[in-house]
Length: 261
Image (cartoon, rainbow, N blue to C red; front, top):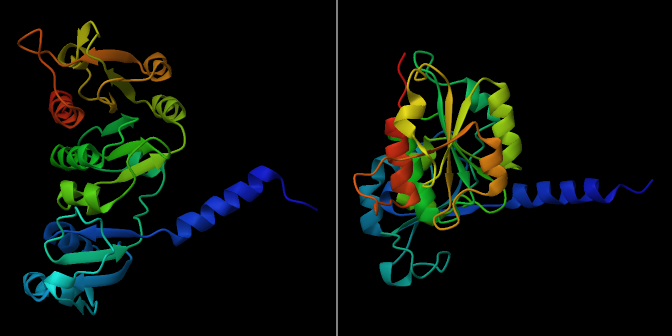
């Protein structure tokens, strides 16, 4: 019996995902990946100088590095990559399901999540991961399409946070929002045109689970997203012309929505 087309496509997607690897680069990103027992590491390329700086992490990882001349660094990376003499081929991390991340975490404080609506710039996502780690968010969640995948550029901007801060990419953002609402989350969408500030929206709700939805710079949140969230909120600026890029806005929003036990 011939398999349905959707079954074939799903099996093909699984095979592609299984074969996918990522090249991480830069001393911070490579060191933290080497020290992450959950990270499947495949190939390590370093210059003598970088190898000396990463010696402890290399020893702990048990990897055998390939030493190369800095003038002949293999062409495994984009020429614009500032690799600092270190590159590590890895498998993408598996952070589990939405339920795993939305319900787990710090039992002493109500959870916080960051959802990304078409935020495709890896540098922005990397910076958001750093802020999410600093402010104790359970996870950063994007979509499988139209969101930044795990890349070397993202990892370098995250400066190690990619190894510790869960980053999930799920099929459909609106479905994810509804699922979180069914778990008891308050879902707030950041929108510069909103009438309510995030501070006012959080009044009396800091003991609740909260998810913050950030849109791409320029277009912002999609209409479907705006219709699905519980409330649209804005960051209160001192001047009417104030604006922040999405990574800075995420940091401010996480601070404004910080939890209280």
